[in-house]
Image 1: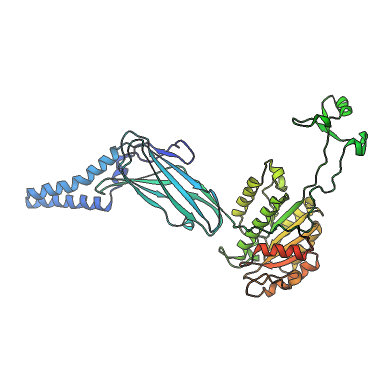
Image 2: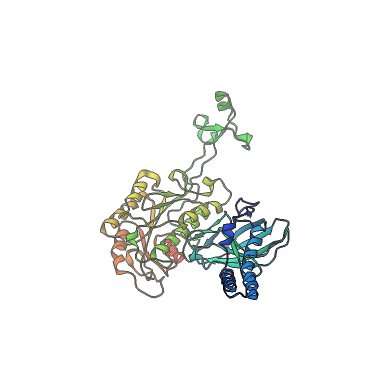
Length: 464
C-alpha cells in the first residue's frame, strides 16, 4: 500500500497517494482485532511447546500468521488515489449550510480494497464526516458529500482528507493524509435594507461642471491624453498641437457619494459573547449597511476603533468603480471576508477612528454610519466630535438585549418587539442627538432594516 499521499493531483483540491510506506508503519496499523489474534497465536504456540500439543501449535501458528499476512498484503499493495474537494458555496452566511463534495479516483491499474475516508473539520462546523467506500475499479471514481454549518463567522480550514485502507478481515488499518485543504469563509448574516433615499445623498452628479469649450471657452479646457475608445469628436486640436500628441476634452466628472462605516470593536464595550451577542449584531449591521450602500453607488470605507481601513487601497473607500468591475459582487465579497474575521480589540477608546476621520478622508459631503457598543462620558464626547467630519451621521448603539427601538434622544420609535431599552444607553443617545447625530438603540433581536428606515425618517430623508 502507498504510505502518505503527497503530491497535488490535477485540479483544485486534488492530491494523489503514490509513495510506499515503511513496514514498521504498517505493523503499527494493526487493529485491536489484529493485535488480539497475534497475541492469542503467540500464546498458543508457547503453550503448544510447553504441553507438547501439535494441534495447538498449528492453531497458534494460524492465529499469529493471519494478521502478519494482512499487514504484508496491505504494505505491498501499490495504489494511486486522487482526491478532490469542492465547496458549494465557498463563502456562506452564518447559520447557513454549505455542501462539501469529495471525489475519489483510482488512477492505478489495480483495484483498491475497502477504503474509509475521514475529512478533518473544525468542531464548530459539526462532527467529522466518515465514509466507507467499497472496491474501486481501475480508473473508477466515487463521489460523496456532506454538509457543514456554523453559527459563528470566521474562516475555517477543511482537510486534509484522511484515507484508511483495511483488509477484508479487519486485522490491519493503514491511514494516510492528503496534503491539500480548502477554506470555508463564514460571513456575517446580512439584511436587505429598504431602498428609501438616505439623507445627505446626492444625485450622483454632485457639483461637477462641464469643461466643454462651448461653456467655458478654449482657455479653460483641461485636456487629457487620448485613450482607446474615446470619441474623436472630443479631440482638442489646439492642445494636440501644443503637446505633440492626441489630446481630448475631459467630460464632466460626476461626484460619487461617499460613506464611512465605523465599527466599534472594543472588547470592553460589548457584554457577552456568542452568535447572539451585541457585538455580532453590530458586525452584521455594518455588513448590511456596506452592501446596501455599495449597491447604491457609494464609495464605502470601513473603519474600526483601531483606525484600520478595510479593505480599500491606501485606506480609501471601495466601490465598483474603484475595483474596476461592472458590478459590486467582488467588492462586496472583499468587505464580507474582512468582516468575517474582525475580532475584538483591546483598545480602551475610539481615538484611532477619530484620527482617521480628522485626517480629512471624510468630508462634509460624506455620510458617517457608526455601530457602537457601550459608551462612557469620555467616549460619548469623542463620538460627538466625529459629527463635524460628515455631512450626515447615523449611530446605532448595540444594547445587551432586544430593546424597543427608539428615535433620537431615546424616544420610542415603535420598532422593537418586547423588552425595554437599556437605561444606560439613554445618556449617550441624548448626547449624540444633541450633537447632530441620528442616534438609535439596537441590539440582538432588532431588525437593522427597520432601524435604517427609522433613521431615514427621523433624519428628514425623503422617499424615492
